[in-house]
Image (cartoon, rainbow, N blue to C red; front, side, top):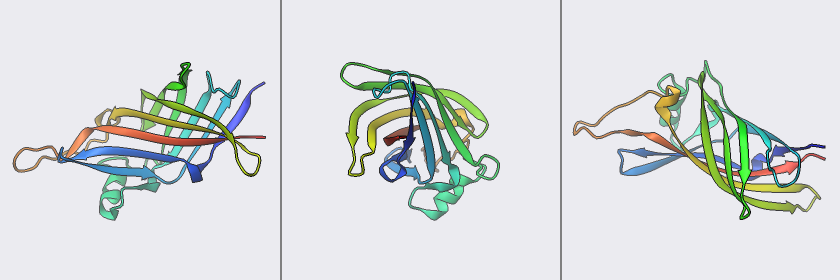
Length: 176
């Protein structure tokens, strides 16, 4: 019998980090997202996971930059309002280290990505809800997804790196 889980958005964060001028890092996040998992056990082995983020909820703490990220130079929110992830494989070792592989779709491009991290275990909250916690990280090349904007400084320096780091702190709630 399978168990269903949903993400607890109040206790989860979906962040990204990208180098600016190759000397500092800008952090952004999505504030509106959903995720579900279906498992055969509470260990999440071979879990089927689906995730979707509302790209319009992107924030980097700078309104002008956020507007640029929503434009066709990057995400093109009007034409592609969501980014999605669908797991293809999840493995966990004896120490709780996780490797989560899946198909990430940004704009109209789908590529396989690998996230690694930890399964932090299970806990029952004050209301009797069973929670599962995860910390996952990965990398992708933004140009693989047609997030194509590029610029160089007068001295020839790169303004925004192609590599994007993903950081996901996730809390799932078991559906009764």
